[in-house]
Image (cartoon, rainbow, N blue to C red; front, side, top):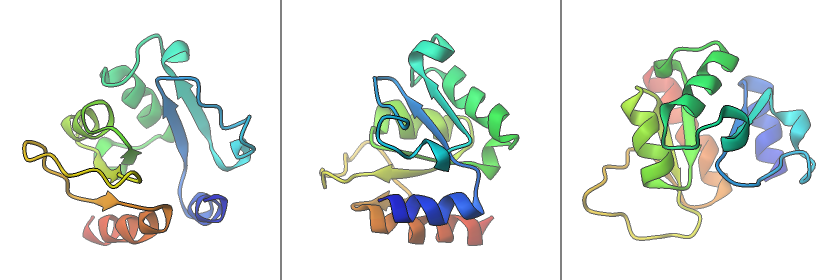
Length: 124
């Protein structure tokens, strides 16, 4: 996974958002990210828009210029799309796609992220 993140960080501003206790520092990839927000630091967790807005502000981009990659349809994908962000569902557990949730881009493994991102970048 780190090799994918290294390639992406060379081209894009990467940020990390978590509602839990994930730590990019603890797993040794902090150097690849421009910013990191948690529900604790923003004082509201996903799906509240504050965390996504903090990320957009830190990256200095509009929602249409951002791609949010998340593993939860209700906490990541739906709220990011509601703000106008592009999204990729990180469905690494290969869950069945819910019938009531449209998914434009889906990554079933880390290697799928780059092709999904390329499709989004080409469409902008």
